[in-house]
Image (cartoon, rainbow, N blue to C red; front, side):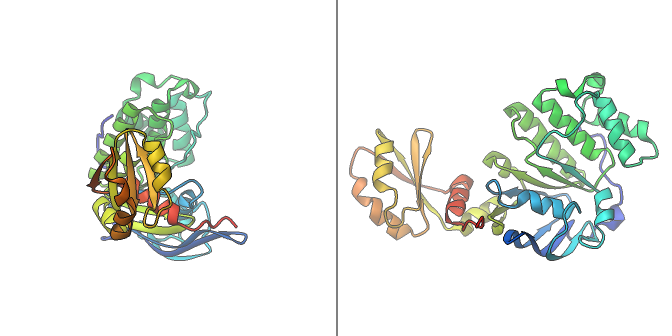
Length: 320
């Protein structure tokens, strides 16, 4: 896939510092607070990764930003527009890619794109469709029914539909779920090209390798934003100490050390264990008796997955 030209529509309305600048964003369903007092700032041309377990409030937050849900509280701007009072105008300048493929499977690629162009009442609809087909390398497949596409090509169609009205901001909700590794890699290459051309992204994902490709990250659990910043900043702020353990019978070792003072998580990583905790001295004191055996213990730099598992396990469930 290749980018042919920058997305420049409505450029004069973007605030100079932030494409997204909101604070205090809150949403409740009944007695349950699914998004709790979240603040977020995303710069123009930035790829911001939004991570968290299922049910953490990521999708609800995205839907509030683009005007599909009304927040109960909060203030700020999206693309220079008040995200609560001017949601109708924001919708025209945002592309939103949902988790599930949401196009007509009995229409061709070209027909689906034409339908989306009609929804946006684009004055040069045929030209817009043609540019979308060319931009994402779908000219030769234009007559293929959407229902016969592979996961990677469905993803490409969905991205083309998001871009057809030349938005300034793309909100992508787990866009690569169920897509093979090569299609995921190609997708992210396209994302970085589009960002370099000035397009801003807010992307939810569960994949740590994808999170590492974002310029900055936010981690949400049970409605609360627990960490944000660059990858290095998030890892450093977590203050997590991690030991990598190798050797035989790691499962038995894990059972022995899990739950000891200072041992917050014991997770299998391939043929090794990662043993982590925030109190380095307490952690070392608890595992020291097991270091004289047949297992090799090496202190390593904590990774994103170590940090996010730790955050998830220490977060308070808001379901009840």
